[in-house]
Length: 333
Image (tube, rainbow, N blue to C red; front, side):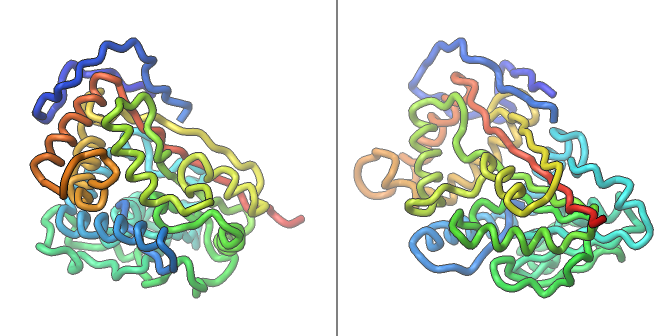
């Protein structure tokens, strides 16, 4: 589904000094919260943990934005899931697992309401509860469906769940969690083994490298990319997820992506912009040194830089690709 460019943003920004005339292509849209944490060592994990903690705090303090982002992606993909599991989830005894469901468990709760006869299990390293939000949010449901259950589990450790017990294993926005080393294949094999024969594992991750970015937004995105990328290893993000599934032995692995504009293109561009602006604002002191700005961190100068960088996104028609992939556990003959 395509995104139609809007003539101006929904949210007023300070106009930047750069002006670029461009005839770049429109974002491709193929046929087709960020809230988790992990425990691991090393400088990469330290920086990724800063990002993760920032995203968790963002969810705690603005649950409405987490809710809106969920429905943004539901709107973009036109559904809550892409894997062909509708019949499975409507079958007696159906089980679905959401890995890294986040403290708001937004996707899981929405799915539990959509499939009331299935059982939904959410796992996260943090406690999953509306009580975890400060202040409490009126935007979360007061009633959690009875077919939902939550477990506090670190996905990087041994997962205390029975193999062969889930029809659908779902995971999205875990790019701060996994490292693309020898451990990732073992971990994804473990996750795939949680599936019943004929069940599906589904992943959704962003490509952390934006397309058609201007010079300031390129600096900003490169700083964020460097922050989460392990040294001498690829980054676990959208372009890697198909191979991660294929390496587990799952069959019929399918993948594609859809493009979402940043700060242009109407409602979807506005929503992605507001989420990125909130995140980048909170990370200012961490990203400052990579932005070629003089002196010590200055919030006003940094905010002016952000305004100019996002102005560039409108001029250059910058967008992010969000990749999806799913695979099916082989049915033994």
